[in-house]
Length: 220
Image (cartoon, rainbow, N blue to C red):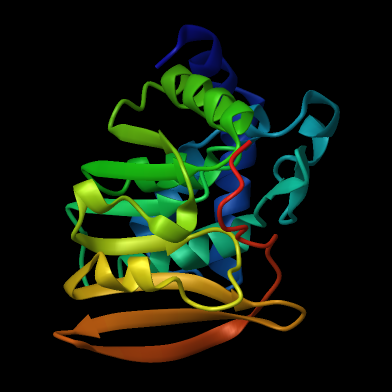
């Protein structure tokens, strides 16, 4: 771990991460691996410096380019849902964004593949993950609707922006028995778990959520 970041984690930010994890546990997050990853992660380095004082609040924050860093509860909840059937060997993340969700996933599995359509966000996220000494993440500048075909199939897929419908490519790239955690909808969005059973897909609705849209095509 980078010495500067390490010292900040060990100081006030480390205590802040632990307090945030305690808040999330009180709100119903029970997976200890997820809570430990939240406690260890310096969320302040993933937000604009002007908002660093709000980094450990349980709220979403803007990160530029019309994007946000998700509310910590949602990050923890989606991570917990991915691990509900055991730890996957690899995870596909659609929407790297700030890199905070990526950093949590990288502490929970051996390999993370993350797709981001905005090049500048991808670059910033990569630097922050390197500062945390997390080197098990592969990144791709691409269209999240298309997934990452050459690395498929995936035991777990997480989508951090909301498409109007579930992208068919993501269903195809899901391994048999694997699960997809994804928010779906426009004005009314619902977090869903989709589990593949051969050529069939079981769908479960979790709760209402609010994400930025998953925009097909246009790379920036």
